[in-house]
Length: 189
Image (cartoon, rainbow, N blue to C red):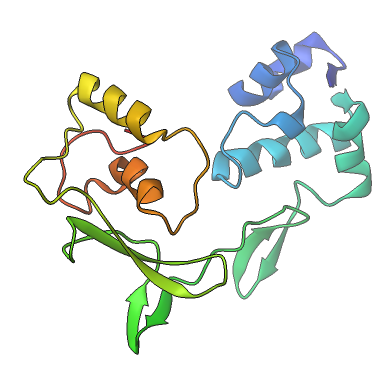
């Protein structure tokens, strides 16, 4: 939990830091998406304020700034990178499928169904997943009733394997612009 040393010093913090303070939100429960620049900036600001003595922390927040380099940056291969920040290792964008170089996790139009995507299965093998209706039905991203029905029928909120057609069908709006579809482009249907 954040503890402010003086109310006057609250003007020296960004709106995001003030929001954390006022709402008693831990820095470990950062309000920004993980690994976003805003998230990294908030952590760096918290470290600066902590080291200057303007604010104090307790519990896990204090440990982050006393026992790690979280909020500090270094240089790696000429790029500024955060220290002690867990990074999600990106899967390689390219792989080989039946002797052909393919992009992973990038849905495309065509194939035996309306869409297809190359991805890796649980054994690490590259597989081609075909999905989408071929009977002439269109993707109804702009119809709230159709969206609600689709999400319920396909149980989009439940976990699913990346190599299943349902997984990619439920995430189709994320790739709408790349597939030439019109409508919202994030989340489930």
